[in-house]
Image (cartoon, rainbow, N blue to C red):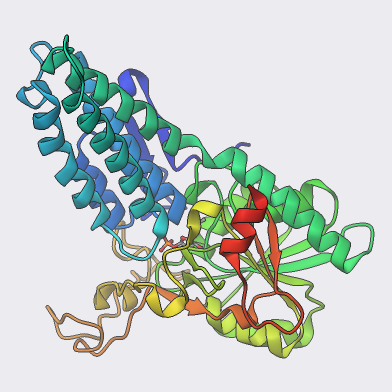
Length: 403
Ligand SMILES: CSC[C@H]1O[C@H](OP(=O)(O)O)[C@H](O)[C@@H]1O
């Protein structure tokens, strides 16, 4: 059985997403018809996962422009390159505001903005005879559509490449032969978080495909429960032996099980290797160091933000206090316990409370793991390890050497 796709491209360039707030009990696809619906889907976490949200934002731009180009009559914003820029540029900035931590969303929007501005400038500098303004606007719209579709589907191949690169590196490091590697992952980094195969979960899938994996452990990852709701679904779909642990059980697992690695994804990696990932990742990194277990980050090079020197520059999203107080599943069709009692939302906050702590709840969605706690950073282009005596990475040097 194939893993669930986070985004589906339908005919006529329409797109829909599986509503991840309802998984695993309800598999419901929601059509995304406007850029505003894409923004809402990302902000409300109907879709989540650093690469997936960048893909949806890009594909929603492609879908909107594709409909406009095919429309008769065409909308006014296609009258000229300037009117196209005035219409699309604010939409790119608007999508970027949906969630701040993952670099992929911002990088995708900046990439499309660059295509737009370069094409508009080229038209303005064109010598006579110039293409008509309308024809130029349509040509630029088609360029943006092509780039957006490229962004929307490029990471599956990268995920497969990096999973092999990382899996082979770990196998060589640990040695051994058959079905012996026990690894822990945090959150969800599979097909539901990407355009396919996954990053850290792709790494685990590769180990399983090679007959090297004994068992994959994963944390529940409260409060959204990416682990118990999404990773569980994906690992069972892929028939990978797996065990869920609550977030508080990482230390006990390391005390009582022979673990070979912690393998996690990333939302944003700074130049020195400091890595922002789902809340709870830093806890696992500290415990992995205590137990001398390899801690491996798996992410595409598009997750490395070379403009940020270290983790202090990574914006950390704080989610609404209420989300930290709900028993996931009570938000949607109320869930019931074994005795048939309706599971109530455990609301511990003053209604309407806002801010990081005013509501009596501290609910950061991510934390930053310092480079010193990270053994390796695996991308589709390289496996970075720290040099002897260095406490951090030099990812700019890794990127230059990989070119
Ligand atoms: C390959 S997904 C990367 C990253 O995104 C997840 O965050 P969220 O579920 O809030 O979007 C998690 O941090 C994953 O590791």
